[in-house]
Image 1 (cartoon, rainbow, N blue to C red):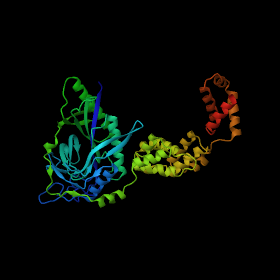
Image 2: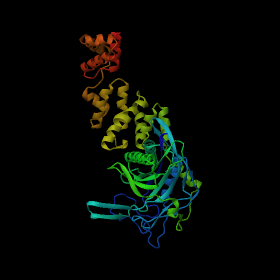
Image 3: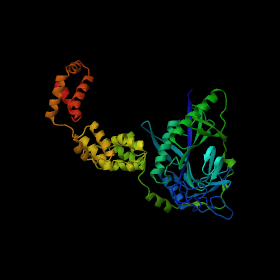
Length: 482
């Protein structure tokens, strides 16, 4: 019987607030170590935490986006453990009664829409960060030293936990990408994985089909989708090999080493009782009124799932609609460009966005809002293909010129003399010349070799310096050789 890989993800999304979840200290990234850790963040005697309202609003926003229940009353607890970058000796989190309960996230994989149920999403504070400089020299730590930076301590997090319903690495990554798109779309997280704003822990187990869930291992702090896929695949293979050799999987926390492309043991995995949760005596229960939920609901943008349905109704394929709704910037670009076309279809516009445009943006590390080709100009370019002014090949040259700042499509077409030849008489002369010069191709085509026709089309296109309308050329050749 085949092995089945079972994955559950726990995602920490850093919330976009100016101050921390229980103090007024700044959450700005990149400050000098330990310059943004207030007395509250490190729990100095006599300090009391005060909950950040914006963090609560962000949690509600997420709950509404995934169709979850917003708890009218939730409780903060102390999660007790001892680690160098946790100055309090405990983390303020939520345990028994989280603010967001249930819900689901939909995603597309291999052209098929799927979904995963969520267990919960709860508010908590982040810990500090350990800096290990065991090799070389560091401007602050010096050679071979470690240090603790508490700037991140107290930063607001929303921990989003799935049911163990994901089957395999590709499905887990597809979900994580959809979740990343959602939290950035609704404006609660910047999604910067390099800075740790969006990081995932993967709980991986394997089982034979139909058997109970196996023993899971947790892979911590996966900060790229590529590493997530590699880590899950390696860990699943490790567990399968272990079980097939007669061994047992031990519940533990593991780290992924991208250089060796393997996971390795970090520590034994704690259970809830090991953390000795109890309600935080310094924080009252969080009470959320219906009025507050309604206020947040009114401020919500149209969700990616709604946009996808609208785009597909306008003629986009599931692949196109999922690609152009991967980010709010891409969706806005698509809407703006499609709104400018007069003869082309929305699907024609989406083809250029998912192809040439996204390729250039990825090469230069830009998002659609930073595109060097405006939505208006892209719409105009696609229209010039639809009205026969440009062939697809010519349009690619015009797109490159637009990207390099040479002007609008019409300006470039005029300046370079790129207008496509669609005059029937002119094309007929070119076709007759190609037939006269290509006796072998003509004979081959009449003998049933379809490729010979493309050779003749190529000759006409070469003679016209790429300006002849290829569809007209092909149609006329078939007519004359029929």
